Image (tube, rainbow, N blue to C red; front, side, top):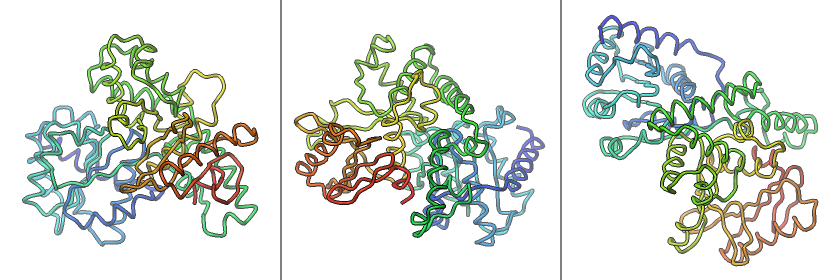
Length: 426
C-alpha cells in the first residue's frame, strides 16, 4: 500500500477510536486487567456485534486514565475497513515504521488490531513483534478459527484468549444505571425496576447496540451478517439454502437434543458430514453451540446426540418461524449463555430411566451442581418430573448443589428454587 494511504488510516482510525464515549464497563475487564502487564498477545474473540471493539476502547481508557500511558503509545486499526483490501502481509512492517515516525512513542507500545484475521499471515508478524519489540498486542476476531492449528502453533505460549459474550443482565442494568448491591433485592421499588428491565432483556437479548436503541428488529440484520459474511462467504458454501434452513431450524428449537440424522433429514442433505461441517462453521462464528451428554464412559458421551443453543435467545426468537414462544427453552438458552460467561464446563445428563437434567457443572473430576430450568412448577406432574430428575442425578453423580430456575417461584431447601432474573444477578 502507498505510504500516504497508510498514514491516513493510522491517523483516522486512532482519532475515531479515542473519541468514542458512553461505553458500558464490561465485567470481564477486571480479568483482562491482570493480563495487560504481561507480554502475551491478547486475542479477543466472540460473535459479531458483541462489543469487541468497545471492549478494546475500554481497555485503552484504563491505560490512559489509570496507568498514565500516553496517546502517542497507542496504535489502533480496524481491518474491516475496505481501504485495507489491497493490504498484504508485506505491508505490516512499513505500517509499523510509519506509526513510529508519526507518533514517536516513548514507552511500551499498545497495539489494538480489530478483525485482524482478514489479513493472511498476521500471526507471523505479531510473533516477530512479540520477540523483538516492546509491545503489548491486543487483537480481535469474529471467528474461533482465529486460533486454528497453524495460528496456534505460530503463537504457542505467546497468547491468551478471551471470549466476549453479548451483555449479561447485570451489564444491561449497568447500562440503565441500576446499581445492584446486597440490599437491592429487599427494596420493593428496586426489585420492581429490576424485574421490569428483565422483561426488556428477554425481548431485546444481549447485543449492546440492540439494548442501547431498544429495537429488536436489528437482530435479523445481525443474523444475516453473521451467516452471509462470516459463514457462507468465508467458508465458500455454495448451497445457501441448506445452511439457512439449518440455522432457522436450530433457532426454532433451542435447547433441544438434535441428532445428525434428524438434521440431515430436515435440511435434505445427502451426508451427515455436511451437517457436521455446517455446525462447525456456525460454532466457529459463535452463532450456535453444542453441549454434550455427561457420561463416565467417553465413548457413550461421544456417540450420544448434543443439545444445541443459540448465541442470543432474542436473536433465536426473531428468526424462527414458531408462532408461539416456548418460554422454557428460551429461559434454558439464557441460562446456558450465563453459565458460559461464568466459564463453566457444561453437560446435560440422563438417568437410566430417561429423566433429563438440563445442566450439570463439572469442576475438575467432580460434578458440583445440577440445574433444571422450568418456566413454571405449578403443574404437579411437571414439578415431580423436574425434582425427581435432580434427586436421581444427586444419587448417581454425588451432586451436593441442586437448583431449579423458574420464572417467579422461590424456595430454599435441599433443592433451591430461584427466579431466573434473580439467579442472573446473584
